[in-house]
Image 1 (cartoon, rainbow, N blue to C red):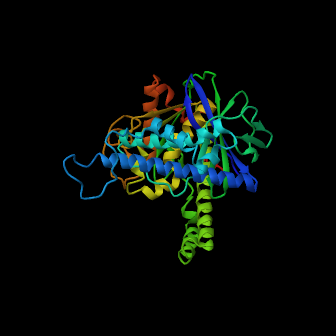
Image 2: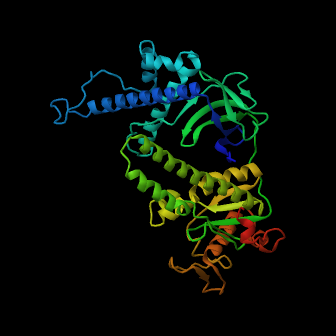
Image 3: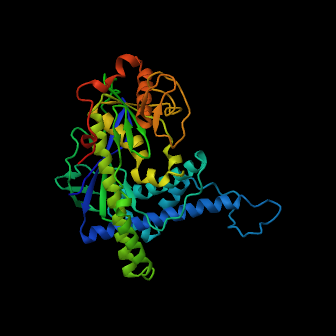
Length: 426
């Protein structure tokens, strides 16, 4: 049974709720061919628009009084920059004469014209991030795996089927009911190794207040030896999602190497490897959601460190952190589950959490190999990760205005202490 999860995109408190539900598509052969046709046209539009922008920028690099040694594509000096608005106008003109572009908007002109415009918006967003975040140029796409219908049709949701522009009624595996009281805003079709998937975004204009601060608090310390350590004294280890499948993955890659590139058998093994990676990712995400729900059962407030996990993925512990998916769990899944369950979630300062004593506050340096906390001031002894989780809990309580002595001693409360076996999802 395939596990379908809700993906939390944009929640703006007291404004708009947006939830994205994922369903597996069951298209017929004609619909599958149309989906592949739209993906191919969107890829061509994306690459053409990217080439146009790069040529315009390259033409401005050459000095006015001399020619470049490296040949550049020469365009008129008064040609405006190919921004999103200019490229969208050019796309409208090109669709009148280009039959390939016209095929995407043949049956429903208004809705499907926006599909190609969304592709240009994706490119424009990539250029904006390139400037603001200091990233490199967007790359040309060999394959495009998704496209968006930004506007849904009226009465488009049916039992085990959805009506989409150009595709008509298409069957889905409705693994979960549609949310009540919410409106279908847009749909995205994604092509994966295991098939085609439909992601429907539902919106609601109802205001949602922030979750209130509760009584029982829990601190979580992200680690490498243990996935997370809790302030209640639990060390939760992550299953080896990738390492458990590494032998099977190496075998498939070894057999792929012996195949002729781009032959039928080569594509078959490429698809097998992609399905295995998808299965690993689904298993990891499923475990994250179950663990997040079980952590929410322990407390009303959950506090974590404000860590940049991107640096972990490039450091000495990159393989362990990427295999466990700790960044995805702390920054995406746990906040969503806390919001859904009505739990208070907050991040605290990460500095010196492993060096500070949770009982007296004394700081002392520890080597990374030293896995226990022995305070020189008060003599408090405990596991290093659990001590850091207690410090995180204390800092969270201070941040929300609670006294540590009154609220931080939740270790002895009924229902808080659980064994590691109870914490881990079955």
